[in-house]
Length: 258
Ligand code: OOG
Ligand code: MG
Image (cartoon, rainbow, N blue to C red; front, top):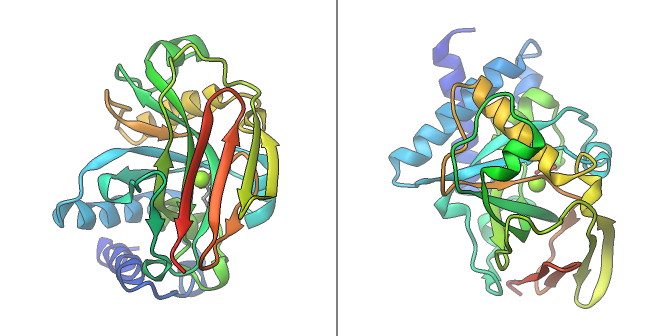
């Protein structure tokens, strides 16, 4: 497929996000769409955002837990790019109208102290971490009915649309198996453990270094890396108060505009 049409795909997804309007899956009209082409579209989509003044903020890993894979019917680890415009104020109010059909999921966030790229061990990955924090991600597929195949979701920047980060803890804090409870208006809607993220969230960082490295990029000092949802995501409704408790790390909360 020519670059022109891949650029058209990026424009279509950008427009869908800007107008909060769902768009048909790209694989509907182009069944041969490959994951490599999809990552090329993702980069073009981000270039459009950078041209509008958004700054790189790091990366997100996706489908790193069984619960997430099952929920969306795609079972391959994917990644996307974060920008500063996606960062939401912890404890603040989210305007739902900016999104198509937003969902929230509990995540673990790392912030990098050193550069990391390529094949690294878990020990090396941890040595490159400056701090770790409880987090939540707002995902919003730009596709109709939140339905997509692997290349669709990759092109759509792996559904990235927002993220919340709680208080940073020391990098040697053990986050391998922390209890997580996500509540909506005080009622638990998802209960899980950080161990659901590839057995240990640090493995997600190892995977991020490898996949980002394969794309010729690296995790840089100051980059935030979201390790992936530990549980299935919750579809947001107006007026909801979302609060997630992370054993030993603390909690992260926000409100959805009524
Ligand atoms: C794809 C993005 C997956 C995660 O943490 O697993 C993701 C989606 O569910 O729309 O962000
Ligand atoms: Mg996520």
